[in-house]
Amino acid sequence: MQHSNSAKILFKELQQFNESPIEGFRIIQVDESNIYDWQIAVFGPPGTPYEGGYFKAHIRFPGNYPFSPPTFRFLTKIWHPNIYENGEVCISILHPPVDDVQGGELPGERWNPTQSVRTILLSIISVLNDPNTFSPANVDASVAYRNWKEGKNTKYPDHVRAQVVETQKDAERDGVTIPTTSDEYCVTSNNNTNDDIMDDEEFDYDDDYDDDDESNCPADYSFSSGIPSQVSLTQAQSTEMLMQTGSTTAINEIPDEENTS
Image (cartoon, rainbow, N blue to C red; front, side, top):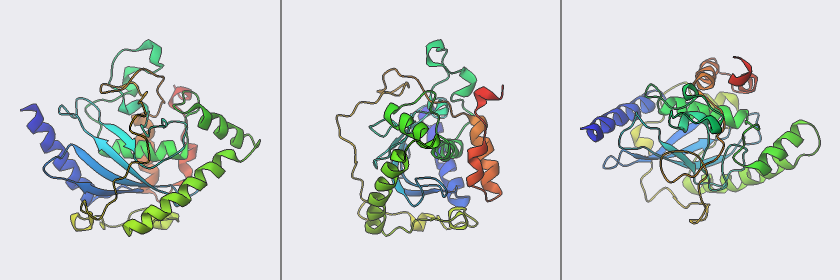
């Protein structure tokens, strides 16, 4: 019964996504025979090093969704402080609400059943705009990001932009137009209907990451322990309000929750 209920919830969320698209995302393929696996594309936010990027990703939902969080894994190579080298995204709302003093998070910052695909995707946009370098998943990317922000060098944006160029080749092969301006990026109408969703023959599902890459994100599946990144529901909701006003660059001004309490 629980499995059936979760499938109904996911079908409803898929319908809502198609009726009210989320800025910066496109559903590529969802097989109705397996509603628990979504293939999506993430477009790099304007005003960031990821601008013009086309990053494929996979969301996998557990059978007891929404009581447990899904996993979010980029299939396209992406260098970011809060993304492990195997593509797994490590942010607070994707972590089960367990008491874990060592993890550095409060249960209220983690997943709860009131959250949804929309809050997850908004959190992804938030973390692309404003990485958390205090509890990084990729230490090298975190150090490079801090050095860039401090004006020491441009290793971080140079590395990311090189990846963006490679993703644009994928977009051309998939026949996808990448939004690059804020006007293009912000969705104003429903043009993400089921008719636009590619089938398996049109979409290249190649994973840029090696199969033997290990996941280090602390969650309930095949993940091992690690220190999570703190992007919470509050930040996701703040991001959504900014999106609704057509602003993407202002997301960088969202304060860290740990500094606002």
